[in-house]
Length: 440
Length: 94
Image (cartoon, rainbow over the protein chains, first blue to last red):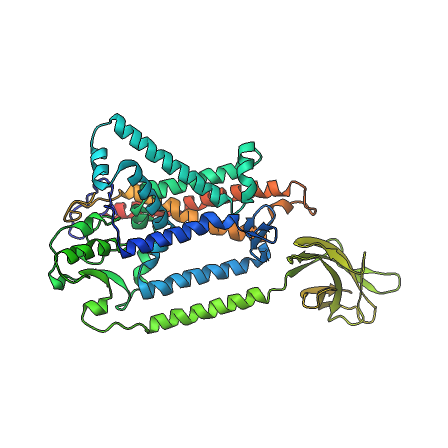
């Protein structure tokens, strides 16, 4: 980085200069705004949706329960989250192979929130030429008012964003009143400010620099590219460019697409929206800058189905199918068997041998159940506990102590067996866990 | 800014600034994943006791946040050291 460039000449770093993207309208700008409304609508609106008398989507960290509509997840379901993250990553690969940096241009939170922040900047400070003039000029009352207005909008929106974020973790309907009444703890405030500050910094100030310097995806996305991947290209061979530079002026990352594909390009297609009306005006066909593929640019036919796409697609379908099966077949009960730590085994007066286990029954179901504990794999074993059935309320954990006894004829050495926990009222709910029985 | 003709000067973050941003950000992601994994298997409210204490939610709230910052700190240290060793060796080799 600070090392000499290939030719031996030192690399010079001019201080970063702010990009003033010119406003643009067109097909792809409309599409992006649709994405902004859909995604931010989901983000700000989802916490307010109710389901069965509770918040539909709530990650209740203090209670260690995740609610997603009719499903409740416990920490024991962590593997499902890991699975989901793998699906998300592979989807990103799949769509990158097909459509290039669609994620960057339309769906990435960085893009989506930046779009809103730039819009606020435009409302407060005027269009791009006004903004440049305002920033270059000296401080005037008008400049101060505009800057303060912009900061108020940004900070207000950032705090609202932090609030919505915390609303996924703390019941959102009581969060507002509680904040005002002082009924929430330190950490709720802390995370609202933290997330709000991150939004403000990333979407207000860092913008395209996040993509250029900090985003891992921006660096490795080219590995998913092939000659048939959709990308934004300038058709230099057409020779229609009138050098109006509007495509450069609208670029949110400040590059010139006419210099070819660059890693800074987030494929937002603003340059396409900028170029098409110019082509219309001068009477040339649209698409001097357009979504295209390397193959098409080289004059070959673009292929849609190719080994890479088929491989990603197949793998993705398998993972999604497996995930759906895993979630639907999930038995809403988990059992942990712990041996009594103090005594390995105990001889009883009648000669039989007793082992004591603590059995933690985690009822993840939204209904209470009565559980019965039995064993399999131990001949003539008897199970003794405080009660024949153990009632565990909905979404609760209960630890029961169980004494397993073996008659002297069968009690010798260590034997593996299984503890069965079955719900009396729901035959589908039955789980087993491995345990070991010790005797002389 | 967008001057017609694109970027004739290389406008960039300085290496130091880039390093700070990348270290902070990447270790943030790593710390987030570590926190999720760690607390999925460990309930901070039950550490050192068999019964769930009544103030469990408050303990968990604080523990998750402190745990997250602890992980973040440790990943920042690891990433900073890595960056330092890489750059200083490059400089030493010149």
